[in-house]
Image (cartoon, rainbow, N blue to C red; front, top):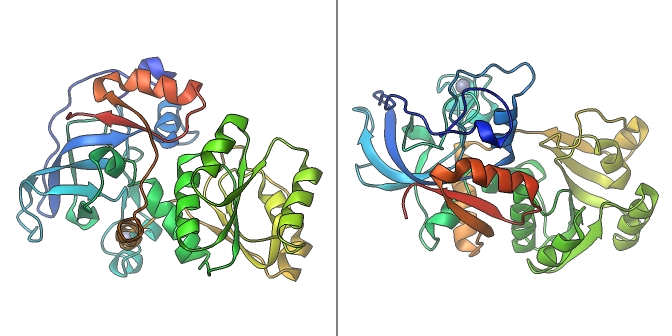
Amino acid sequence: MGFSEHGNYEVIKEFSIDDPKVSDSNILIRIDMTSINTLDLMTRNGIPGFKFNMPHVPGSDVIGRIEAIGKNVTNFSVGDKVIVNTVYGCGKCQKCKSGYEAQCPSWKCLGLHINGSYSELISVPSSCVSIVPSGFSDEELSAMPLHAPLAWRNIKKLANAVEGETILVRGASGNVGIFAILFSLALKLNVIALSSSPEKEDKIKKLGKVTVLSSNKPIEELNKEVLNITNGKGADIILESFGSTLGNSVDLAAYNARIISFGVLTGAESSLNVRKLYLKNISILGTHNASKSEFDEALEFVSKNNIHPIINSSFNIKEASKAQSMFEKHNLFGKIILKNRF
Ligand SMILES: [Zn+2]
C-alpha cells in the first residue's frame, strides 16, 4: 500500500512493486504488522523540499518473520520473529561505528527516505534487526519501533533523568507522549502532562500518578500552575515536540533543566528569552530518532518494567487509507495497527 501522488488519505492505494533485493548484509522480512505514525501523514501530504520516489510506501514500524538472509549475516535464521529499528546509517562513519547511526549524516528512515512497512516484504540491514522481546502481543510489538526508543533516548540518554526530577510532557496523549509518561513513571519521575483534549485527560490519568494540565488555558495561567506544582522551580526535563512552544518551555524550565526538541507539530519558529537560557544553565537538545543501541535498551526497559503500549484499534493493511482517515479525523488515544497477518 502506498501513494503515487501527494494528497489526502484517498491517495493511499494498493499497488505491486518488485520484491526487495537481499544484499549480502541485509535481511528480507515478511511483515506481519505495522502501525500508523504522524510521519506517514507527513510523507503522504508531502514535505517541503523533500523529493519522494513514486510510488512511495510509507510506514516505519516492522514486526515480521525472516524470509531470507544475505550471505554475510550470521546471527539470524530464516523464520526468526523480529522487530526492526526505524533508522540506519552508512555503517562506515565514526558515529555508525560507535553505535549511534541515528547521528550519521547519511541516516535513512524506513518509510521516509526509502520504502517502508505498508507492504508484505522489506529488506533492511541486519544491523537494525532484533529478535522480538517475549511477553507482548504482536499488536503491542508493532506499536514500539518508532516511538518507544525515541521516548527512551529523550528521557534517559539525552536528559539523563534522575529519580525524583520533574518532567513536563507536551503532547502527552500522542504516541511518543504516552511512552514518555510510562517510562517516566517507571523511572520514578514526577510527571506533568499537557494535553489539549479534555476527553483524553482521564485516559492519561489512568496511566499512573500524573498531573494533567490543559494546554488550552491562557499561557500565563498555565505557567503559574506549573510553577505552583514545582514549588516555584519549574520542570527539570521538558519534552518539546511542538516547536512553536520552545520559548514557553524555556520559561517553564528549572535551573539546570534539559529541554528535548524532537518535533514541530505546531510550527518550526519560536522566540525565546536567551537570558533565561544561560542564567538558568538550560540545555536545549535536538534529536530525530534513536540508534539501534538505544532501541535495544528501550526494548529491555519495557520488558523489565512490564510496560505495555496502548492500542486503539487494528485494521487489515488493505484498509490503510480508511485507517489513516480515522487517525487524522478522530481524537484517538493509542496506536492504530495495520495487519498483514491475523
Ligand atoms: Zn554513518
